Image 1 (spheres, helix red, strand yellow):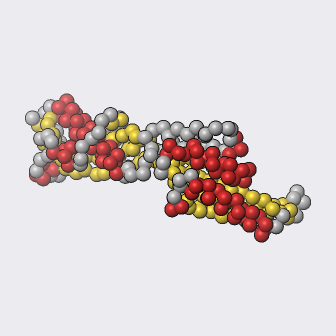
Image 2 (image 1 turned 180 degrees about the horizontal axis):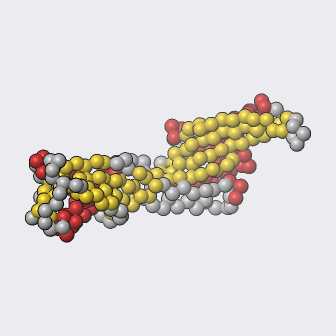
Image 3 (image 1 turned 120 degrees about the horizontal axis):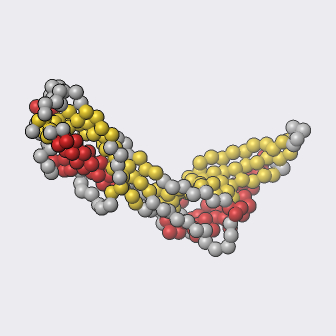
Amino acid sequence: MKLNSHPIVLLIVGGIALASCGSQVANALSNTSVLGSNQNCSSSQAKLTVNASGDVKSTPDQATLYLGVSTIASTAVKAINKNNSETSTVISSLVSNGVSIQNIQTASITLSPNYSSSGNIIGYSASNSLNVTVTSISNTGNILDAVTSAGGNSLRIQTVSFSISDPTSLNDQARVVAVEKAKNTAQQIASALSETVVGVCSVSDASPVSNPYPIMYNAASNVAGSVPVEPGTQITNVQENVTFAIASK
């Protein structure tokens, strides 16, 4: 069957990778007869573009805690001094429980007046927000216990999110999955059209997208015993757009 030069475009939704994948996109494409010379990608050559998605599941290996320390006092100086003291206690608790000081970052510090219903200033509120990276994810529950005890009623655990510390390998795996899917789909479509894939004209790699699973936890709802923390799973996704040259068999 003879096709004209208009490209065919197909969108493929990716699945989950069940096994560890190989090295590079080039290897995924070159292990068959798909690769052809540049002459197969001329403007007059019929082409098929496949957009494929590669997903890889993994278990997060680090947690990020978003903590806040809030204090109130009759004056601005008392409010900020009280906040400084209680925030320092929380930081000391984090360090004592295995968190590196390099993994504790101040996100924001605020100081604002409190008003009565008649509009008069009746005190001040101070807050200090911290972003804390926990590299030993199994210790997250114990750390939450410790900071809750250290911060008391002034502490707010705003969110806990999970991530992969080094996603490079997962991105590589997902990329190969996407390219393999694109190649197989292109060959199936070409065969159905009584055509054959004769070359790869272009490959464009989209940015990987990770999907962490945050949980919410409030210090006010703390109960005895270690806080139950489950990191669950995370999906690393890569999109690949591959244009193939096709010709009659």
